[in-house]
Length: 150
Image (tube, rainbow, N blue to C red; front, side, top):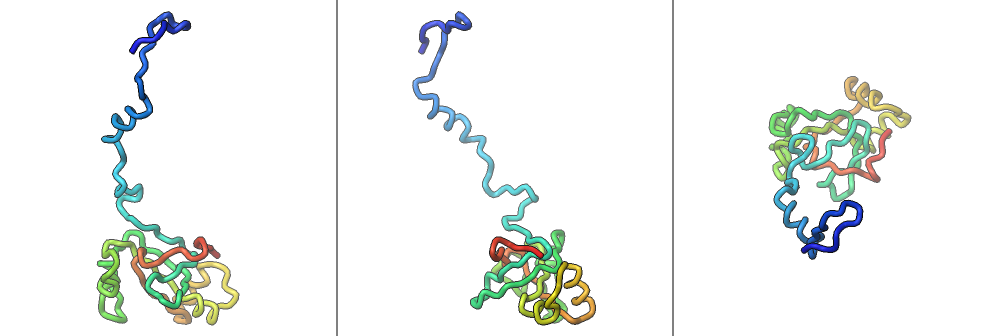
């Protein structure tokens, strides 16, 4: 459809009757796949060390502090010696390709180190045997209160 000449260019101006609808069809095939992730494929968020998280499987709403993360180690390949199984075998309802997170229960941390300040304090307590950590697939843990950190 040609309208009056455009006064600025002296050329005919061509318009679509409904331009707002046509661009959607034109670019629909170029949409980004919702399953693609910038981190190479994980569909879940890896918590940061020192972050308070909650266990999705806990009916009591157990909270934990992340002591260490293993972004390159999958739940299927991380062995838990104490139970003779991998993290994936102990958590069959979660992704066996998820990265592994080591965390300590907040209650245990507060009993053992009531004045802890940094994640390094927790790691030291773990290395001396004063504090136990538990290993989870990352998708089993969820942020608690916005994922506050210490």
